[in-house]
Length: 166
Image: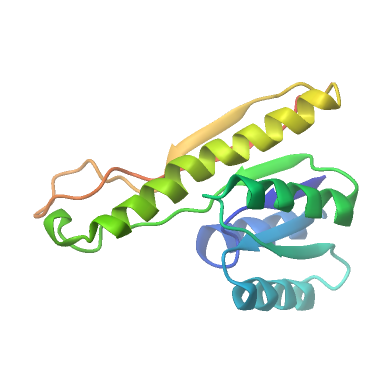
């Protein structure tokens, strides 16, 4: 299987990439920063010398960049079988009243538009190859709706999407 994971140069995304590679899948890493992408590709390439790992810079809030990520994965691996919308921002490290509006706009752009951009690219591509669109799963990255001492922003949403097996 050929897997694309957004936001995969650290944290949960890097962990997922590592596990997909461990299981023998090809993985396309992505992040907004070229240095982070290069370092993650080098790290995982060293851990899995027989694995197929590539990277591409992508800001998921920008539709054209998400399409370019898909195109880079197809160029590297021939097709995309699994797409994981993992990229996300969290501006809730401060009390909400102290978060700069530009920061929460960027958070919404990444967490909402990024998810929508990824799903749109996948659905359009898989529909065009008559694969249809299979299951998708979304989950909250963290439980934010629990009692806390300070108000927090809503949870980030992540999504994995893949075409059906037929």
